[in-house]
Length: 242
Image (cartoon, rainbow, N blue to C red; front, side, top):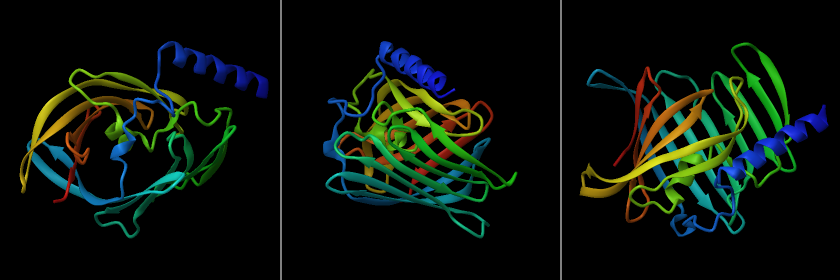
């Protein structure tokens, strides 16, 4: 069985390379934008033209000599506990090292090495699943790091890119392909005035479903202003607090 799994991984990996998917260590990544950062974003559900706030997302980005950590605390309205996420990647390659996530519905712990090991705890069904996937580190990015990775891409008008990511969920797991479909110039209005941004349209797999996400990223310093998520049924907006 292990040989079959390894063969399947190699088949997927060769297929990804044939389609020129970006993987860790890509020399075009603009790591000069990596810096210590702390910010908060509001998470809204859009119904018709009304915005309904459901949570606040506190993010801290901490680069070190050999590792980059992204810590997220999501304060959901009317929830007794926060959602916690921790993602660690290697510097300078940005290859995944560890990911930990815990919320009311589930807990996930992943360690990336010669394979992906960890566990998935479905708190609703009260089922714990061990994880041991034959996917060697360095051939993909962690899906949890992907939203930050977009800020480091060599963005320009019309830029497109296929990116290899690893994701784990009961609906769909393993090495997947995220796609930057388009990049165009736009403007975001803040209290400081009008800010020139890159509007990045991305197709991603979220909970097993392909979803369109738009990122609004400052051209000068790659600050993230907002994300718009369209899954065919619901419109979600995540917007930076000034």
